[in-house]
Structures are given as structure tokens and as C-alpha cells.
Image (cartoon, rainbow, N blue to C red; front, side):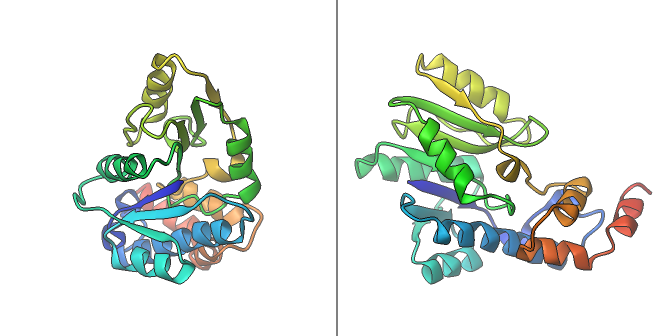
Length: 217
């Protein structure tokens, strides 16, 4: 099952606060989530999708796309949300999960297919963020093989935890999955990358040169 944790979009992207107002950051986060869900919706023969959230916008999108909503009852962190969703999957006998964030707007379905094709019979596939610090895709089989702990520097801990299980761990570098948007330079990369996603069109409407200058003042 594909799990997408979504925290409160009304308070999203605090690390862009130096260049964007909160309404603009929320609009960006909503556009990125929609970009991700549209890719999943077009992916033929994909696994089931679960949106793990208590955010009204995210839950409304789940209904629109006919994806499952998994309640985020703790509403504390992505880590807590995925722990809870993993328990739900285990209780249903779902033997694998693929966790991706909702802020990777250049993601491609072929990349996700590649993750599944690389998946061991038992083990892990990890796709790091472009800076090598974060984890932008994490496949586990069985679903609760090891706990996921998300944050700014999650990739190395995830890699260590996966290897500690004694099961195979595959690391894939995938350009679309790798670009998450957390800081002004990410926003610039999003704007200049090939493509016409909603979030790209939004970023291109902003004067990113002025935004970067303001961020450095």
C-alpha cells in the first residue's frame, strides 16, 4: 500500500517563511500534494493509496481521487502518522508499504514502478532526497520491518535501520522523487525544471530572484 502522510497544510513549509507568506506556502503545499496525487491516479496497476492525515484539504482530495483516508489521530508528526498507518496495514494483512511525501511534485509513475520492481522479497528500498539527507521514498516488506523516523536527516538512520534487519536494502537515486521543496533554492529548482505541474506554474508566477535576495538579507 502507498502511504502519504500529510500534516496541517495551513501551517506548511515553515522553512520558506523568509520568502513566502503563510497563505502562499499553504497554496504551494496544496498544489504539490495535488501534483503527487494526480500522478498516482494516472498510474496503471498501482497499489492502493492511503492518505494519512487530519487536514481537511488532504482528506477532500482523498475523496475526490477515491483514495483511502487513514485518520491521523495523533496529529503530531509524520513519524507518528506513519507508525499508526503501518499498524492499520499490519492489522489487515498488508505485507508491504511504500511511503512517499506529498511535497515531491516532479515524481513520475515510472519511478515508483522502479521502486516496486527493485523491492526484495523481504527487505527495503530507499530513495533519498537530492541533498542526501531526507528520505523521499521508503518501501518495506513486511510492512513493519523497522520503524520509519522522518525529519531533516532521516536517510542515514533509515539506511542503518534497514541494514540492521539483515534483509536486503536497495538504494535508488530518482530525480523526480529526489526534489522536495523545503527551502528557496528548492523552489528555484522546481521553477526551472522541465514540466508544467501545478506547483511549477505557481512557482514561476513568483519572482524567485527577488525571493532569494530577500532570504539572504
